[in-house]
Image (tube, rainbow, N blue to C red; front, side):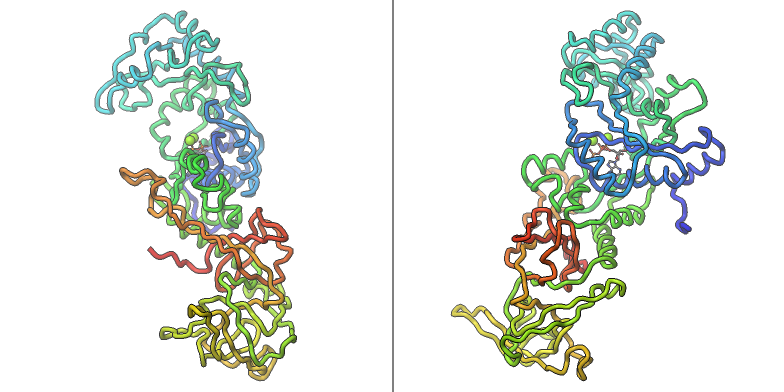
Length: 552
Ligand code: ATP
Ligand code: MG
Ligand code: MG
């Protein structure tokens, strides 16, 4: 079925299965830290973690990596679950790293007793200074060889609340001259006197990521622990801890892939949180945010995101993906799914002077030319129509095929009209445009197929609704806003990333549109109904323009 060649992770998994490793089991996990909302980078990890389990008949668990009570919150736990489900994945079990605090503690005690861990009473700065450099060995801590009983006693005190934060840490005793800096007696536990969102005040000593992650994988039975490339240098430490812990053949294996970076986007939860806290955006779900809830509100479909992730693939090299690829993906998806409607963003009135006053008729519109099964609908036509202001020009440049005095255009799904002039106000602004129609050019009439160069869209004035339309542009002006030297990423925000149009005109068909419904406004783009929208005040978000019109 799947003609695409295997990615390097699938090759590893298939090879492990052939060799019968871990009893032929495949088990993965998605391990978010509940300290922010998921972004499109996480979608890449989710598609891989769940996708590999699905493809090889295994399971994928959701594990909240909640080892740092300083930044974590239940609000984030709930949103993470919602976003994973929205993408179309279902975990087997939900686990929390904090569920393993006791097991991790017991393992740490075991390492102390075996002389493989010790309590260090130096400050963080002191410890950092002794680390050395990649080319120079570090210096042993004066506490490195203290008696086991002393470390044990102090480790219990670290957790009882009697030792202030920052006064002691537990370190693994590995090798202060290892070429791998992570093996130079890494910190396993530090003291935090803050209640944890799940374990309350039970613990005061909290495990570091490196001490928790691999062991959690082991306790759960993970076979392939997939993570991003920045963890490559952590892998020897991951394996070192597992070697101390494992007593059979089973070993979880860490495999690293390239993270998703995207142009004109920041992709770090810390930075996204700053945008939210400083009110540079309206919230985590602002349609300009790269969060999954932001993309959802913008009108992105789960399918478009999954197709995009599939297209960019998984490699072992860092790269930056052009955001226009993501935009291409949503265009492709909505092109197949969306009904074509008429919306006029910058309206001016067109009066057909030879069309009888008071008359109205229906014309037939094809719902989606890409999909015949979506059928047709009837649209009201009358003497007065709203058209786009820039579809009329009194003195046009060459090759302008829209309305200009003496020129003919087709009104989409209706008649050919010839422009006869316009009316201006005292400042010379055009306020009305005039035309005469050819009654023989409607579909089904003898001249229906007469060719004219331009076709424009319209909405019948007495059959139109008012709407607010929100147009979005890229949130940042710089291609790589997170990486500009000497510049804070917030200085690179695009001041015009949101343009609100208050008096748009849309066809009556949209009167019952519900939040998250999506439509193509013909000739303009794809739009979806914002959750702020009400029956009396319809609000549409532009998901993406019809064509890639971004100019640098
Ligand atoms: P951030 O740097 O945005 O805070 P994080 O890595 O700290 O992200 P976690 O909650 O720890 O966020 O991430 C959960 C999983 O998602 C991890 O396995 C991580 O490797 C993966 N992940 C995070 N960001 C990306 C990304 N941009 N591309 C691919 N995978 C990612
Ligand atoms: Mg992380
Ligand atoms: Mg993080």
